[in-house]
Length: 150
Image (cartoon, rainbow, N blue to C red; front, side, top):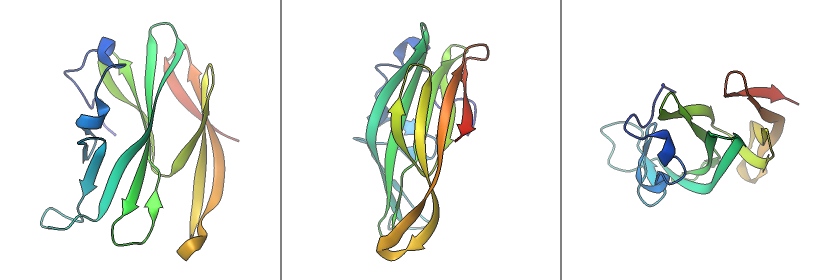
């Protein structure tokens, strides 16, 4: 996802960073929402993305992660996704630590983040089948998150 989403943002600002009004990857968020278009010539948006949960994860002193759960609704009615984005302080700036386009945050504990993923789309009101549970475990030597499937 690239090395830095906010090169001008110092790590000390991560707790107070206004993620509801910033650029996060392809999304230009205003009041916690962004619109996605099928292509640059489109006048009507295809998707609406909205922050639904914003949580600080601090596995050790001086190390912060910001866990953002989104809801991504298809405006023409074919469904929704639940992207997760985790940003962190790294080398003096804020950068992406993890991204998953279809998972729900289950819990945050002392050294791990647990996500429920979704599998194949079953159609209509059936939605998605349940996918594997993922544990993102904090690794203190590399100061990063390691993904483990359960």
